[in-house]
Length: 152
Image (cartoon, rainbow, N blue to C red; front, top):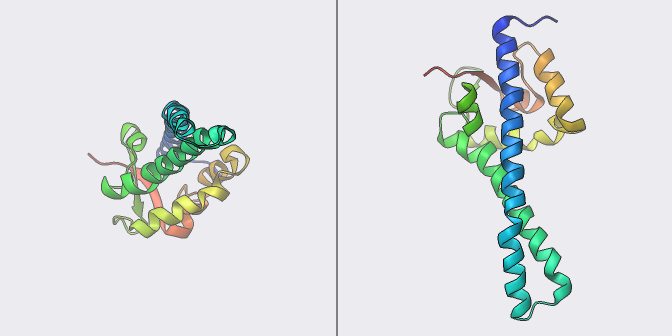
């Protein structure tokens, strides 16, 4: 199935957007180890058993990672016209199949199904985006959404 120029552009923008957001979330997660380290030190000083030090440091990173993903994949696009920060940079947005604004539930469903779309380092989602008529990953198909060019 050959993609027309518009579809190729959107697919390339989606892939690029996903890589940028993954890099930003990874940086935020790694940086969260610093305050997690100091929090763990403080807790050890006030009585936390030292063997729990790593648990607190890594746990803070896990919390920041989860909150970051929820913010960037659900809350931000819900509050900003269907675009994550990287989607805005690449000129794309999420919309319903009818052209309306997706609901918070739609964004949540898309995010939940990232578990499937992200299999094999994202190959499942990438293949679906490239092969489906509307360039949708599984999360989009189930939520009834599509990624389109953002009109400014």
